[in-house]
Image: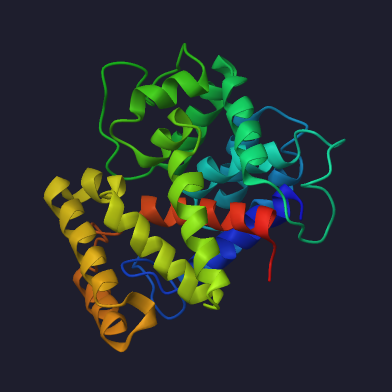
Length: 292
């Protein structure tokens, strides 16, 4: 499966699973509907198809610009940021076998992670500038300002160095800084086990989302609603898992109650970063484990 195809499919699977507090079929936000996320997944196809032939930052900027032609809402900045290095890693060595072809193949996630780390280490100052431009274009809520390398200006460090500076306050930046530690260490293994247990993609994705959120408070919620709200969301995820999660009637009731608790007119408690990290886990599972 190509990196571009895996990225688009990961976006579609992620938004289609009924993750509490997020957009999914029949569950919309005031400024973003389920269909907007479908259109956004389609929009990134062109830019991602060339991810191995152009600099990483340029692909990210082009993907966000393409998305802006379909929706006025920020539907996929986090998704693009987390999926672009993965997709570039898949296409980084056309002479190798595990990640080639149009059909799913069983690859080695350790090899993929090594490639991702190489992609990140090779980023430049120009990559950082392109990504900063993409972030300004998407205009995500709750960014605030920082003393060094603020996105309102032009950076003078590489993209990886910029992400390391933001790792303490942003979950996606932390993935860049740690070589996608959560994706490869927790997200993909959880999803793989759930699929091996016979769970549907929807249920396996919800279980992965809950596991990630239970382990670490969502930085999107923390930025928009505060640390206490982020801790509350993680507590609800742990309670849902303790009740059996998607594998038990009591757990499903807890998930439904969690969804209600996380929704408000301004979507302040939307665990969006956890959803993005879930998409990264889906990508790795598709590339290294296959569709079935």
